[in-house]
Length: 350
Image (cartoon, rainbow, N blue to C red):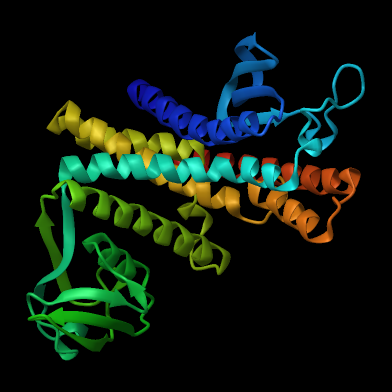
């Protein structure tokens, strides 16, 4: 477990530093003063000051921040804002600075996807077998058919076929497939398995492709695209009540997932461990990017909403009102983090 905790901290730092570095670099580019750049939460373990920015590492590995002068009422020691204060920057400079955090998460995710595809190749959505009496057989699917679309969404990887199948709750799956160069449509009615408690299309799919340079970048993009689709779908299922609290994990749950993955990967050597951890960075980076873009108070998406309102109105929302909204959002977020932490701990005693 000690190794897994260290691996988690490394993954956490890479993902969070990427996010905050996006804010930091765009702030500097736009002349916005960064008061503090820190990783973690709680009391500082280590800090130093360079220029007019304090850099800190804090005790608890949950989050981080890039604090701008004038953000949420933060002022200089003299009690007035300098020319480099966040509110004094042009509105679109502030939009770019806030958006840069999630954007850098997607950049990091793409880099991780490039490494994974280059090292491991990809599995294409080619049907390898069709089960007797299955919904796929009744729909006329055959071995060798290439799945191009599922329920209107483009399909480029076998992982996408698997994900669509796993989250299906018995609804018809509308496919566009390719056979001998010709495209055709088919509708599969998944059948329920009492043994597994889920619906199956009745196919196995996957054809390995060892990618060349151009294919590596192409399928790295599709890999990141799949992660985005899976994250958005999972969030919508959580909001819709199709997922439960047991399907949600915080830092403790992620450590457990890293530990389980490490135990399996280490039997195949160091390279397998490294690639497995890169996959975690990819997944968590996409998750952090998407969650931060949600239009909720205290998140980057919530701040972007206020900045876009300012751009449309031509004047900002009164700072005290925006500050109250973000404060309420931050308090709700902290309560949620505590509940997720308790939920993670409870899983260890089941």
